[in-house]
Picture 1: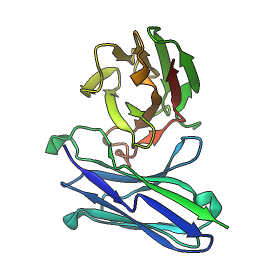
Picture 2: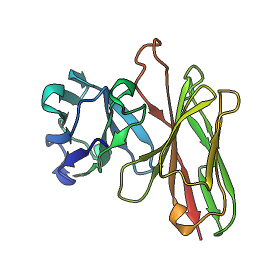
Picture 3: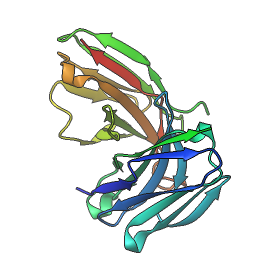
Length: 113
Length: 117
């Protein structure tokens, strides 16, 4: 099956700092989503971004599908940004992947005052 | 639109007991998914429904696990003869089907935390 690798695995930031999280995937994908999992376990949708660039407030994401990676940018980080960030991909029915998301192992982010 | 809901949020059971979880998807979503997440890992796919049809099952879904979506609305996931290794967070997600726009985006519920003693 498709492999999804995220880096770094852990990240500690001072409030106000910027960061870049990376997601590499091993095959072409039909769907790519970024999630934030809060301390209570809720997965919060950040971006649906199989290709291109999107921005939402202090967060932005870029996926370069031809090179099989995606980046999540967090600017002016806040303590409420703490949690685990997951990248998840779906290969799609036509490429034999079905309709399931395959998740990376996540980046654990801690933002300190 | 109240989002995906799951019940119960927490379940503690003894090894060997049966448990059942419920998921209510976003009302206009035809696709419903179950995932399992263990500590320190990303969620792993278990099974997927398109309306009432169960279209795909993971090898993780042993014969002790069964999922249903009888009327194409809510879904249940039952685990029979629970084992300590079943302890995990069970997540449900839903998405629109093709032709409904943003068809691939999956929205997740809050999960059910299962602890098997």
